[in-house]
Image 1: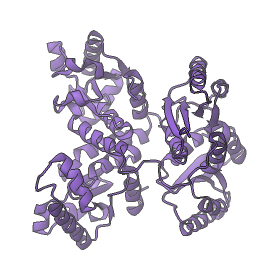
Image 2: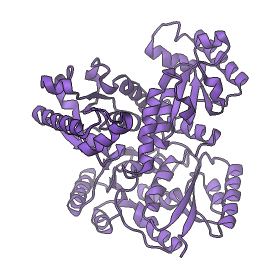
Image 3: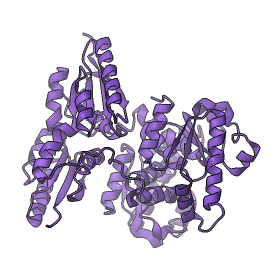
Image 4: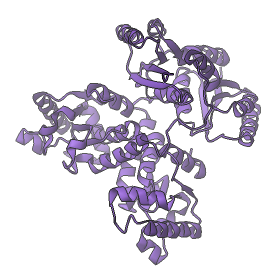
Length: 271
Length: 271
């Protein structure tokens, strides 16, 4: 029997990033089906809506089976046009906006493009400032201005501190510094720099030595740095230090950046 | 009349980041209502589900009006428990999974936690590699390995290149280098470094001089660098250079990082 396949369109009047993520979480429940996924952003007028319909219909004909179309289109006229396409439509706003209006007892404003916030909003400025702060405080560059940090990640080199810090800044507008724990710190038996003054903001990442060795091997093949024995030693020392200093920590080995960042928020009671 | 208010919960068996984003896009349509928003991630067993119910019910009582609850809970038993709470529930999976099963003609697997992908997947490794590449190629640090870049952003200092590059890496797994266009480049009348060899990957960001002056003023108050006259001059020269070199560009002044990144993808035909 042939593997079932289906073309999927994500159609939005904004970037379509959110509807694509939510669509993914639904589609990932159907492992047996092979999906081809196409995002069409910025569909914010009727002409573009008609072009989208033509594109979906062409695909339907070529595939011999109607595509799935996920939409977040706030303008009812544009949504109406797109939903004329020969497709199975999952319409986020049409499904939920009307029941929500009833529940809240007010009409919605049907305004396009609010998802990511205005660039003039204080939230948005905070995010940009947090990204700048995080870049300036990556990988132990400096311990200046640590009193401004919302969180300070610590852990051995290559355990996921940098991507997590950047995600915390980008997604949540948090100022996230990070410091590597290195052999010199273990010998001294002390946290690097002035970190002990900021203990309440510290959060540790640890990792399985086997996975760490694999990651380091890709960067510095056949080095002592990447050897399993050395990785085992560093991870053990780092965990001992975090335990002694009372630092909460998480094993990042099988977790995505999003999961690590969310756990950090929960554990440090941020937001 | 009192401003209407409502408490909103985002309840997920994963990070809840996606359902929160989608919830925001719905709630932003109700400007008249003041929402207090609470995200509860990792609700992946029945005990946690019952704790969530207690929390929602307590809030309902305290508020004197039932909260709104958005859920992405793939396990039907956990979803069932959470939906017993005294709240108005918007359930993403319960609403869409069953019609999608009918359309696709297969049963869903009801597996938790696939949204952000496995950390062993090639997609995930690509993202991490892209973040490392992007950090190593921020702000014109080096023009080594530019042949590996998926996109190279150019523009005057502080027009949004760094956050956009990081977002392209983090969200889309793209290797994004960026280079500032500086007065020396305008005097020489040439793109910096070896950029002209990579013209097909270049994308420009520009910005309204008034906004640029405002952003720069926050970093270096009363400097020539931040003065409106200098910002006008730099933006004009940068646009002239991009026009002459045939580089597509976008005005970032009123656009979010997500919107800029999405436009870059579209314009360079990436993915």
